[in-house]
Image (cartoon, rainbow, N blue to C red; front, side, top):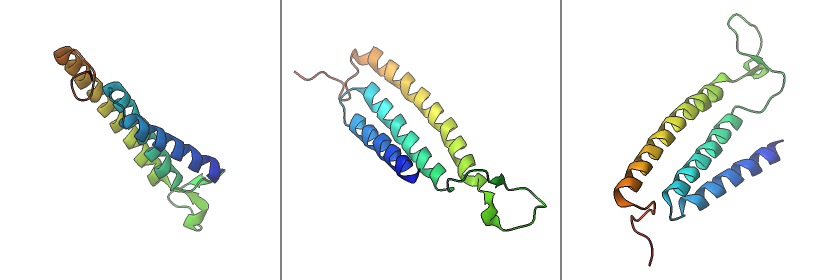
Length: 112
């Protein structure tokens, strides 16, 4: 399970970096989204992958190793919301830039 998760994180991050280096702004935005998905998976995996573990509840006895850690889940949920908002902002800026310059090239002009 850890190997599959590691490969998927590496694939998302590698694809995101490759798309960041492309000349079109839409591809750059998709690359940023893929990198944020890879980071979210990485943060989520830091909370240990456990099956059938109870959440942390007040008044329960026992070791903390017996419970799931809610902090990575909360961090990933917050990162998803912030990532959605910044992607929407980037798309609005992309559309405004395309309307002003007439191209979606990163440098603002098409190569000759």
